[in-house]
Structure formats: structure tokens, C-alpha cells
View 1: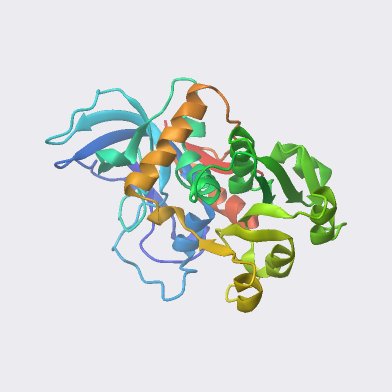
View 2: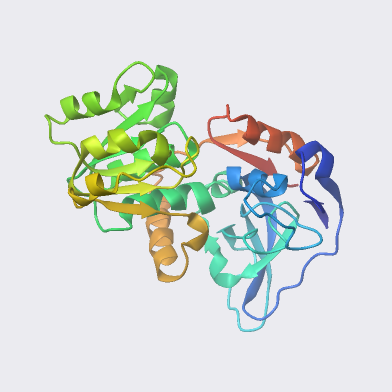
Length: 325
């Protein structure tokens, strides 16, 4: 099979290779998926670059990317799945040597989820990390019907899904963006330009001084002070990143006296029954055509280095996806 891989950390153009590998065979409890689309997330490029603290090559050769979509081509012992079933996959590259940047990938059958016919393979390759992160940030603590939710960075891959899912869950949604164009991309009707407006003042004015019940947070450290000001008593801040301040000082007593729940989450650990709940919600929305996806075409496997560089540049609006013929 054709695949892309790296055997050492470093810049994409220097370490990513493309060539032929033996296709994997499904073991007991596994499915073999013919991959047609491979999603590239920021975590994928950071792993390839060796940007994680204490990073070591866990395997001599790594085929990158955790997200993807394709069809079930074969099954291992004990698996009852329809050959040809359309699926999206998750955690393919998490603590594993072989991710989705290849024509085939083998996974435990529970990591291949039915992809509704109305959703393209490229769109399916956006679900594993961005969409599931958004779902968990919103629904980890129960229904949000009637709540007011602030989604910071609503034009981002996670933020855009969160804006849509919050509205679908019956919440009032406010988002922060850096331009009117990004506000339109976010799909959110109520928005604040954080470069021109004090976010805390704007939120309190928009909510009549009440604040918000839940914050889906893209940069915990940078926004901590504003979050503390606008979160309601017994509210929840669900954060999936803190890029500006990776080790921010925590305003403990401020959060304590408001009885705030701080939920720090990562999609890789969203497994088991919790993941099944998210899958069910996504399937219902996808079947209904209720979600809009933001696919950034990244070319084919031969273009993987340039696609990684696009993700690293940070200017794209959506998930960069490789089409694998």
C-alpha cells in the first residue's frame, strides 16, 4: 500500500517520506479500513515535529494522523461488520504506529463508526478530534438546553462545531472572533470581536449582567481573567487548549468562591461509553444534515508535507484533509 511516514522528528519537508508498505491485516476484534480521507490536526503536526515535552519516537516508523474516513474492507476474528460499510475512524494515530496517512489502517472495530451516506469521506475525516472535542466540551456535564454558552474562538475547527452543537442543544450561543469574516465562518449569530472589544464587558452587557453558564475555551491561560468575571456561580469552563500560557497561574480562590467546575479535556482520552454517547449524537445530527463542516483540501498523500505546513501556519479555516486515491 502507499503510505506516508516519518522515522525521526523534525520539519515536515525534511522528515516525511512517501512510499510503499505492506498493508496491515486485521487481528481479532479489528477491522481493516480502506482510507479515502485523512484529517490533519494540530496535534498531528506537533507530534511529527517532536514538539511535546519529553517527546521520544515510540516506534521506529510512524504513519501519522488520528482522524480519517473510508470503508470496511475486511474484518478480524469475532467481528461482524458489513464489508463496504462507510466509516469514520478515531484515535488511529494515538499511541499507535500506523495512522490514517495510508491507503489502509487496522483498528479495533469500535474505533470505526458508521458514516451516514450524506456525509463525504473528507467531512468524516473531521469528526474524530474536532467534532468530538466540541461535543464533549459542551455535553460532558449533561444537557445544555436553556443555558447560555460562550465559545471562544468560534472560527476554529473545534469552535465552529461547538457553535453549531450548542445551538442544536437548545442553548443561547455567543462566540469570540477576530473579524466579521470569521464571525460568518463560525455560524454563530451573536459574536464579539475580541480585538476591538472588551470581551467581559460585552458578555455582561449581552446577558444583562447574568454572565454565562458554560464556556468552551480555546485558550485557558489567556482568557482566565475574563472567564472568571463572566462565568455564573456553579458554571463550567471546559478548556481544550492554553497556547498563550501553557502553564498559567490559577486564580484558585476566585473560581472556588464561584463554585466553578474547571474541565480540562483532550479527545484522545474520550473513550468507552462516553465516546459512544458522542458518536450517537453526531450520527443523529449527520443523519439529519444538521452539521456544516469546514474542509480545507490538502491534496493527496504526495502533498502531505505542504499540508502539515498549512496546519502549522495557522491561517486555515477548517480541517486540512488529504484525499487518498
